[in-house]
Length: 221
Image 1 (cartoon, one colour):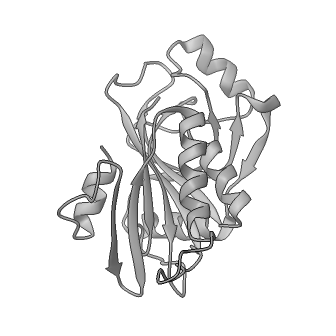
Image 2 (cartoon, rainbow, N blue to C red):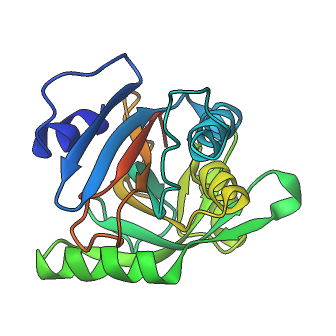
């Protein structure tokens, strides 16, 4: 859902399949969009396939694609604190996991700083935040309070899985998500989110969305 308007902003008029479009040229970079499924398991599987695809040996006659220079997760999330109001953009400094013994996966500081700087120049409300990935949609205030006690400020269902896949592939990554529900209310049932983009080019672009391979997700918190 969120991938489509971003793709249209970059000149994409049609998708190659329900889950992929591109590549297109954006400045010195190539941009591809991908959509994954709902939840950490599907996100992990899809992100791993996307991140590692270009590093696999290709058949004769098929050129090897360059390794992506970065990954940016974009989409929707739920706020666990009143300090992040609805409509703000949360740029993750780190993402915790409500599974896997509470492990955490840091974002790329450089990539996070570039996204934050761009949003600031456009006067878009944004803030650095610690996210947490939940295996299920978080609805009740008590559930949200429990996640906040773990040290998180926002919650989603896929970002930790994507950041972990990017780290495994050696691809710098960060997350920039739109807060759609505050701690006092549940998220819209139709909320969907987009995840991840791989940057392919000589430099990581300073324009949000340019030079990115966008990977999307499904209903979120």
